[in-house]
Length: 419
Ligand code: NDP
Image (cartoon, rainbow, N blue to C red; front, side, top):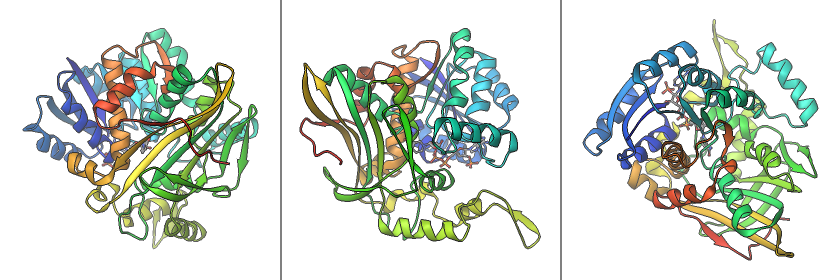
């Protein structure tokens, strides 16, 4: 019997909340809090007759630590699930520390304003020293390790699919399949078609920042950075078929490089269709992906925020999206002195997700792991004081929960490798 505060009520949060409501014996009370309270009220109303979980709602601006502290003090949750945006990670972690509550999220911190000179100075130093230039990195949240440790609290970072399940797959491969892992390729394939010429499957601002950034991978103990979308491969995905995929920087590479230090190379690939890439390049070339405000007819607008207003809301893609996602990890390494390879992945059907929770598979494959991660924290399976990423916990109970609640894994002991 637990009381949980969920912050955010967008595409991912609405799946996670519905999934929590399916496990009401653990999630007995849940408060949905977000910037726009009407969205929380609407979801709570829809779910009220379908669940035993006692639902309440609240308005909160999570950019303001004091507002989060006040809400936590009045609701007194056992866990705060941050499913708002990566911009709110630090303010919500501060509030959890101030109130003595466990914390989790689905994406690592990045600032909303990348022109802030104080942040910029730290960022530029990190780019030079670490060798990758993504706006997000773990240093900001890893800096909270000692504080969480001292407070006896757990912070679980990045518990969606990627990051999240992909790291549990790595921990699983390490525990059950290999003595040493040499290479990890994380492959994220979305074979879904929503029928629009251009739309993003989750928050457009976060998504477009990620894919327009330089790619990078970890090799022989250091980062190798390459121009955006400059490394392309083709792969034949089970239940999806042949797709083009491109190397991206991705946050889990950073923590895996630390936590599985013997690995010689870690790469991340994501599939993109030609129409998506052509639109993205064009939007970038005309400045529509910029987060720097411009003056338009006497008022300031942020181009990427204006673009977000024009694009379809990811939450509305559900009924239109057909096809499947296939996300997983391919490993090479050694077991009992012999070379081996191994592929562990999940296939998820957009239409089946829509039938179950009214959203497409991208929100589903993130929301279900968020609920399962919360379940691990609330049942004590993953409790230890400090700040952790998913690969630092026992993968077995988590993979078992994922299988039970909608994301079972499949295995291939002789997969095609990516060159
Ligand atoms: P959405 O934009 O659909 O939803 C974001 C929600 O957060 C909205 O309800 C929004 O409220 C709320 N919010 C934004 N700012 C604040 C604030 N200052 N205070 C309170 N609430 C706020 O995003 P998604 O659901 O697509 O994504 C949620 C998270 O999941 C993101 O961090 C994203 O990066 C992550 N993600 C992780 C993946 C993974 O595999 N690990 C994959 C996909 C996403 P409002 O309605 O007012 O705008």
